[in-house]
Length: 152
Image (cartoon, rainbow, N blue to C red; front, side, top):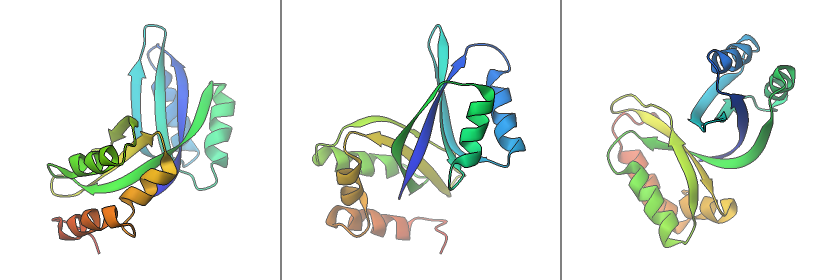
């Protein structure tokens, strides 16, 4: 589990706008780790988590493209790509009365791993609940260790 910065970028609903953002990030060698795009009648909201440790390249691209954006902290949790993996995390957070504002996940290979991005109401408390060091995290750690395809 990692605490990551997520960019919420507001895009005009027109063909090629998403392609332009993705191409410009790729040209700057910024890898998109996870993304989701939701639309409204007026604009789309692109949420991105990127592999850009200091975020300079990402922020330069967004400035260059003149796109309105906001940053927020999210939890990125690596899970086995199997039934019930997300249910276990959601149940732990629910029992701790931590609201999940929204979530999305990367596509994982069958029997492989997936990354789930969670925007939660209380990041610090959620980290303690999910962390392998905490009591609630021990069950999750055991499950991850036993999952098929687990890399060591």
